[in-house]
Image 1 (spheres, one colour):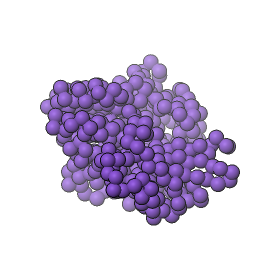
Image 2: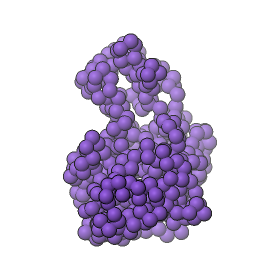
Image 3: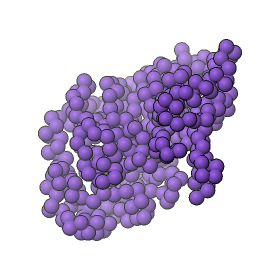
Image 4: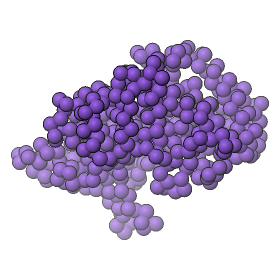
Length: 434
């Protein structure tokens, strides 16, 4: 504790990484076949035995696992160890169905702490930093993950959790927080509050580690400018372990995947075919060290691509591009594929902040889509540009981006509810008519 250095494993030659992955994969497959009936049945259905998996080149032979499988096997169907060996659970919100509960042994927790510690170090963190964690705690993985990583590095850790912005700002000033960990939407909220109160000169933040929800490059630049920091992306899933599965380094050109613990694939989401490096598809993860909840070939539904292009930071682990969206988050509106990130890009490029909401509805057999965009205080004070003029410009930008006409409603500052956790960007009312 207190003296954490970048592990040599992060910079080992690719051939050694893949050899280690192959060794751990073959062990993991035997482990889950012997200990998890769900996997044994699935593999038997495909005619695959553990001895058929001799390395990462055989990974494609294994069956996929989906979130529906996790829900169907809730709570203990994918447990790989006796319950008495488990020391913690974490869980998804369950807002779209039955909860997913992930189990952890103490060894699993130690690995997770290590992964999050690597992310903090990659963002410039040391034992001399004050790590301000305002991800949610409890069942949500964000708070516990970065909390454990911060302890591993030896930072002074502020376990703030989300919400209570006044208290966040007070502790940030009084204790000299240097690294901020939260969702990007809450980082934007904090930046807005700091600007309104004229506190920027009293804040010592140098870096932020943001994840748990999609965010665009435009939003990154907005946060960096408002908070005066460098903003790093971090990726993870409750199902896999939590934040720290991958993270950005100083190059900010993709997130390094912790390949000593996870194997990543990109597949065609329609056919399941494994795609070559550089092609966009669905991200699939295999856990090769986790024991309590050991997922093999888990389909994340996140769309991105992988690259082994050399990185200036010296890390050799493969990088994943920031997810471009989720195969199950894409909206089909008026027959057109619409991604929330496309809308956000247009809004931020026109000088607005990340305070917006997309409302999709259906009248009769016709889809409607409205984007509510909030004025900044400076825009509200500027009478030289009218609201209709602003709305017309946004409509034009969205038409160019999406190819369809979107209704736009520009609203007053502070009229859209702020997020203290994951932002609710899309309200799709069409399911009310199903």
